Image 1 (cartoon, one colour):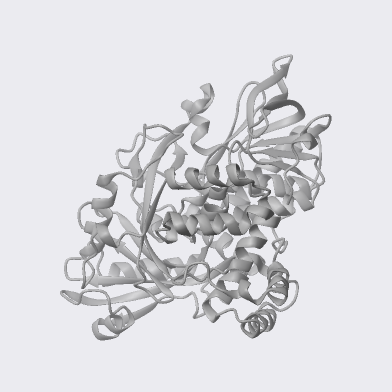
Image 2 (cartoon, one colour):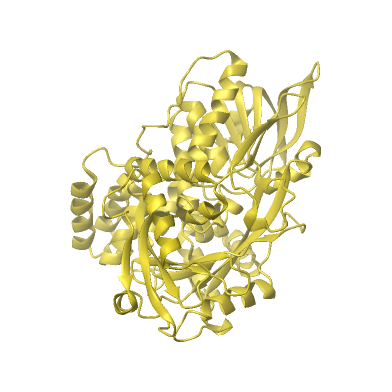
Length: 521
């Protein structure tokens, strides 16, 4: 993946996508596979905003059954199953525990009914996904960190997990392989119209202060919170903020779905890269869309609600990292953001520009297919969705379990520990073998970057060399999430920056600038 700003100029594209989050990536990928000439620009890094600040879940949305949003749940469950099959390296099963206490808002019978309906909407899946009931003793043994006071029992059920930033990156890589021009750090500054209809845009290279005219027959904005910066977008969107905290390891391979005591909202505790994510909050947002921050009240809320359930309470000193993102939802007069539908729609302005509004990472593929079908109809092109049954770009073509066993054994043989090998495969899919070849040349690259985290130096250098990294923050926040999984001191940042400096082409001044930017961020 090489950044190529000049590839945007001098061509007339069928489609220009503005916004490089999950919806933009899926749209560009699908459109390129359908044979359209495609360009996608992102003003920052790929997945630089909310698409790298999610709960890292591919899920049906069990809680939406309470609001009778069966259509949305069924759609998401079907996409969850599809992604598990098409991207087994990128999307993997994750079971959730739901404890039932004497004071729980939802009791055993009601939850049993909801989970049975959830399984029904999934077509009564196999035992790895279907729900199971546990009595008090068995549930306590399953989740020993939970308090037993008032515990009556609980259930587990299946959904799935991903690394959101790497999901987006893989789709961008797939779009490029299919012929799309994909440029990060490139801002769309103005639209070009002819006869009241859009026919292109001016874009600006954020790295070298140069501009280009991009001609395009159709333009789609998949800009998330920045949609509200446009005149039509302001009337279509409602913004809410979601915050997650990264805490020390508490869970093994299963997550928890819990209900906040203060307001009845659902939140999660999720194992991720050996740490624990807790989140998310859900509050209306009218703040600065350029700088979305974790506030003290967000931290206090999540810690208080989590500690209702834990035998040993967490404190602020236990927080390893945190992040905040802004969701875009359709306008609604409902008082609570949690009651607003997460469904998606496509709006088209009078000048022909399309705007993607709302949605979820789980159902983004299907929604993007609708976007591309609308574009094709406008262009008079008769093609069908190209992503519905297509393996992900980095998915192995052979039997996944057999392939995993072979690659895992090879990684272990080269000195990569078991946990790091698992995450290496999840992060790179069939490209893992390229990463392992660098360890053959230099065995020291099998070492972990941070002893407590399953990420190795060979991975770091491979990302720096092949994944359109521009800044140190791109590498350490989205290509591999070290900045939120560990409290990296300046000495560690300096060591990492020195390790990749030659690969990145940074001289001493550039390296210092990147280190300072990471420390300030």
